[in-house]
Image 1 (cartoon, rainbow, N blue to C red):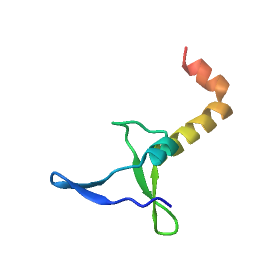
Image 2: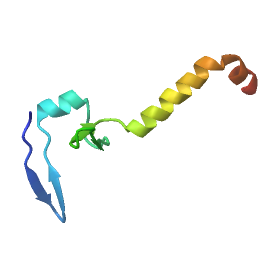
Image 3: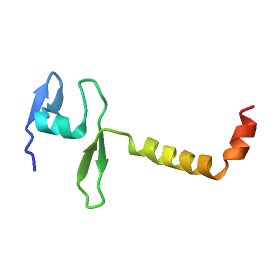
Image 4: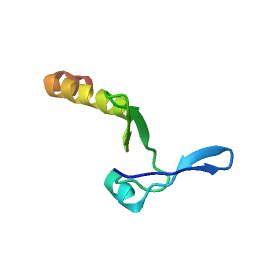
Length: 75
């Protein structure tokens, strides 16, 4: 567990991510992070958009199931 301290930045509140957290998230300055609600009621901080990931998983499924149809449509 990593303890973060909430700080005031202008009119907003924020936290400073320690170096080890930045490395674990594989993130850089300016990259977007997503705070998602976990099933247990807590929160998770992730470096990708889970909704976009679900859409890409569905697209991958369609591509695997209908390669010939998609190839014909691409002509």
